[in-house]
Every structure is written in C-alpha cells, then in structure tokens.
Image 1 (cartoon, rainbow, N blue to C red):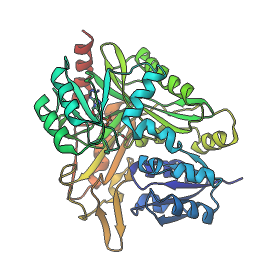
Image 2 (cartoon, rainbow, N blue to C red):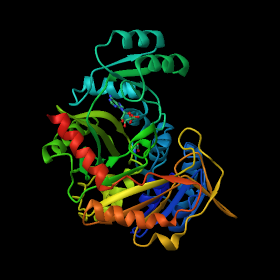
Image 3 (tube, rainbow, N blue to C red):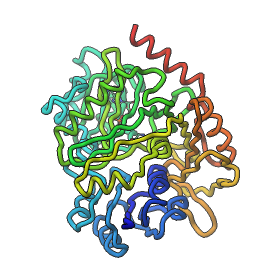
Image 4 (cartoon, protein in one colour):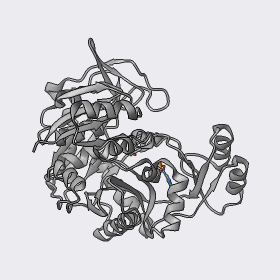
Length: 427
Ligand code: AMP
Ligand code: GLY
C-alpha cells in the first residue's frame, strides 16, 4: 500500500525530510512559508501556521494522511502531534507532554535528575531573577544561563565564554524571563546524536557537529546553527567509539524512562574531560543536522514510520558511510538584525553534485524572499570530510548576493582545531 504522509514544517530540515520521503510515499506538506524545495517534491502543499493544530488536522483529513511527520519544535509544543494522533493519524513526533524534554529546560533537567539519566550537569532553576543573580555571585565557577522556554537556540548565555557574570545578571534582570535554569558551564567539544524512537526502541545515527556561532572562527552570537559535518564513521574526528557509546547510553536511558516516546530524540552533548554531558535534548531532528543525516540514510525512512505505527520492530539502519558537510546561507545581519523580506537568488544549475536545501525562504510570484531565519543550505558528500567540504563549496557558487556563509565549516583547519582542543581538554 502506498502511504500518504503529511509533513509539517518549511525549513531546511523539512526539505531534507521531504527529499528522504518523496519517492517512498504520496507526500503532502504544510508550513507558514512557501519553501520551493518542499513544494516541488510534494504532491500538495498548503500554507498553514505550524502551530495551528486544527488546520493541520483538517489538511491531514483532506489528503487522507496515513502518517505524519513533524519537523519543528513549535508544532510539538503546540500539541500538533497530540491533535493528529487523536484524530487517527499516527504522527512521528512526540506528544506535547514528552516534547517538554525540549520545550521546557527546567523540566528537562529535573527529569534527568529524577530518572537518574547520566550526564546531567549541576543545575538549579529560578523563578525569581534576583535569586538567580545571587546564585551567580555565590557559585564557585562559571554558569550557563538558560531561559526555560524555547528561544530557537539563541537565549542561552554562557559566563566566561560569551558574557561576564555582570553581563549575565544584567541580561537576567532585563530579560523578563519567568523561569531560568542556571547550570554548570560545560567545557569541551559539542556533538549531536539523533535517534529514531518508537515503541520503546531506538536506532542511532552518526554523530554530527553543528557550528552555532554566527561568524568565521566561532565568533559572534549563537544562531540556530550555521553548518555541520559528519565523518565516514559514526564518530567525529575528536571523539572515540567509547565517547559515542557513552552518549548512546544516555539516549537509551531516556527512551527507557519514556516508553511511549515516538519521533526523533536529539541529544546535544558536550564531550568533557569526564566524557559526554548533556547540553540539551530536542524532540525532533536538528536543523542543520537532518541535512547531514538523511541524505546518508540508506534504509527507507518510510519503513521506520510504518514500523512505529504498526508496533513492529524498527528496521536496523544502514548509512552510506560518506562524510557530509552542510553550510547554511543566512540573510545579511542574521541572527541579531536579519534582513528579512530581501529578494535573493539561488542558481540551481550551479549547485552541481552538491545537494541544495531551501530553508526559511518564501517563494512569491516574482522570486525568492528571505525571512528572519536561515535561507538555504548546501550539502556536500564524499569519501572524507575534505572531499565533502570541497563539494559543498563548489555548490555554494549558486548563492547570489544578500546572504552570508561560514565558509570555514568543514575545512581541515577548523576540524583540526577541534581535535587539538579536545586533546587539551583531555590532558
Ligand atoms: P541550547 O539552547 O541548550 O542548545 O544551548 C545553546 C548553546 O549554548 C549550546 O549549543 C552550547 O554551545 C551552549 N550551552 C548550553 N548549555 C551549556 C552549558 N551548560 N555549558 C556550556 N555551554 C552551554
Ligand atoms: N542545530 C541545533 C538545533 O536544531 O537545535
């Protein structure tokens, strides 16, 4: 039977999901922006806010969706998975109560403590910003300051890295946040492991390293992620198989504690001198990480979805073993003052062998327009990170004016720096 899948979301991550599913099912999609990549792959597309559960359920009903996949966390937080499930469409994405693992950082840390999930840093939560400031004054060491709610990865301030303790206190006092988490600053190299989860089972994917800082050389404010890479093994050049396995143990502990969880469980880890610690969990694919992971996945994604729905064992996953490098083109001024509503061009003919993923752009009659977020990404693949990087760079010739790219991502200088940094941490 041909499945009919409804995909919710209009970013680069969702374009990667659409590409993985398009040949395996009848695909319909909805998002607030008109992503030309998703539109061209889907049999039908509707402009619907990702948080409008009622309209999404109506669209699922109209197209006869037998499955749904949710890309963005905002949809999960708004209960779109609950609404679709309750209306009879099995949805690969957790219910809002379980998505709190991502959407409420105070819940996340408390859950880890209560369930004795390994890798939890020292933390406290505060509703009173003055009490949080006092904690900063009295804490022996640096802290990371995190608003409890969703901020698109841009709300966290790390003392001793991005801000001083005084700046962190001013940030808290001026923020208007109702609840914050203060936690031990973790020092090391970050990596992501995403797992497909359903029916109490999970299947792991290769580790990815994202680059959150806006500018070349890891300078500037945090962003949603400027680009990412994977190696030819499940590990990254700065980590060992044992580091990966320790992170996998964390994923397993979470799945054991949440037997009804379904969807992607995304672990963001800091590889510290003591091994991997949890920076955060996300309840969906990473963006950009989905663009590294899905093109290398050889197992049909639809088989994971149907196994989840039908209560069957999840298929073992097979990956191509190619390295991948993803680089985002973002609007000028992103993330602090993005030039939204600007017309940009992408020359699809020039992308060559690289993969092009459209993200938060809006296709109008007279062309492609930026929004406040990342515009499009190019992914190179190859037998080494260097080869993948070269293919991505060649593909980026497709980018016209009005966008900014971190060309250093995936280049051997930066990859080498990460290895040396990890060596220093381990010494
Ligand atoms: P999050 O929104 O939790 O992903 O945080 C955004 C970024 O802030 C992470 O990718 C890290 O680079 C940084 N960060 C978050 N928590 C910590 C921590 N406890 N120690 C050091 N850096 C952190
Ligand atoms: N790349 C980070 C995220 O998707 O949250």
